[in-house]
Length: 538
Image (cartoon, rainbow, N blue to C red; front, side, top):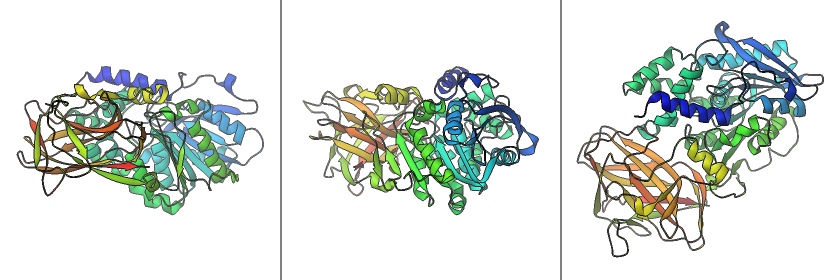
């Protein structure tokens, strides 16, 4: 593995560049404050007597004012939302409190990883606001990015005073985020651990998780995850009738979007979902600074309707809004997540073989089954197929329209299975979560697989549409295993003349690979269980 500190430092630098102002915790922000807005730095008592460093931003005019409580993101401080908070106070009349989560920077206590103490802190901040500001107890909302989003959702389940939530780049299932299909998200975990040690004071639970993780044991983290996952508390959120808006990036490398589409579907109260290009926290980062931003503009309308009673039509709009992850397409709106997919096409994985026109072993993605074949690859060796580097890949996709790519002819067929389909004469929109069904026979008990879906042109140059890791645990060497992998959801416009390509290999730098050199994997398509790729389209 790469040196932990070097990776953590570089990743933290990337995180802070996109998600936090370059200001000290006690910086003088009066030059940026609109006339009539009062900004005060306060130490607010949190749970158990821990003081939380907070910016209290009071709007002009008489109250009572609707209250917005905004916990800062992981490793950032209360200035994260300084621009957005000023605008919300000045333009819309919100009483805003942005605070540094316990254990980070100049807040007291230790980092509890969105545990019960963090939820109690948020409720304590609400208590303080009601006692010390002209906040309206009947109009309370919470919003946050990343860690702040998770704490906001968890607090909405525990505190029925929270009427509306804006969760941006957050999570609903912590275990699924960092251990998807039993595969450790190495870059994400190292970033979170490294940044917590650099900017905070890890609590006992986090220290134990890190110690065990270094030994290869993720069980302590998995045991703590349910209490820290809003998905396990959705009944309480629904019972409270909380109005929930979720904003997220297709390429989020810390909290992939699939867990949130499931969570959104299970919500029964007022809800809104926005999915757009970018990586973790990048779609809404500039809006936090107070710059024009689509996510923050929508969130302001959300709060205005649910907390201020503004008849702005947000309740009548189609609530699911998606922006294609490639190109510069417009937003598309749907009545629910299921409607994002209009139909599904099942393609069958054909026998990989060489021909005079295909010098590499490549199988087809066929409309009819082609079964009874096997194809062996070396495990534990990388290929040019990769999911990309956390932050960099998503940022390039969002701001420069440069997706993670591959040259299909350069993917080593000794180390990967490759299948390609026919060109789409008029193009096609992949819209939803593709699903792969594979039969694999490993030579070891533990085996990591990485499933990539590309759109490739006539020269074989491809752009990564979506991917998913999958790790076999306690497999029986030499015995075939049926594997079902749901890739991360996406909306992607495949241009006319391009085709889909499915690549499956056994190594990716983003994840912990449970594969050793010398192992092998046999891909197959038995007569009674064909290997398939299900492609959702709009």
